[in-house]
Length: 120
Image (cartoon, rainbow, N blue to C red; front, side):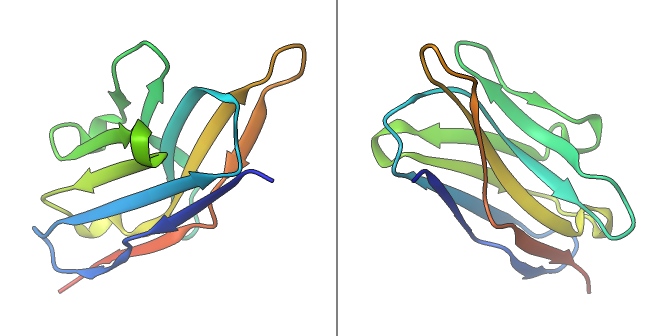
């Protein structure tokens, strides 16, 4: 069974930094795309940062220049480095991975979510 386990959320003051991690286990499939989403109270889930295999990263405008998505293939882990955090970044953050399976539909897997709270 493929699993994504997140860590790294917490409470941080405005202007601070956090790094989220998302460790994948149980998969032998090729990663087609991966990304970080967030959902704030009363709002829809939005894509914050994404990586499609072979392409460069893309970011929602509100986090450009502040957030960086990366992956360590050796550790099967994806990261989201968040700098210059703002109160409006407060949300539950979810990692997501789409796996390619020959002859089968894509396998979409979500992490359990980690809460990021930016407040003084």
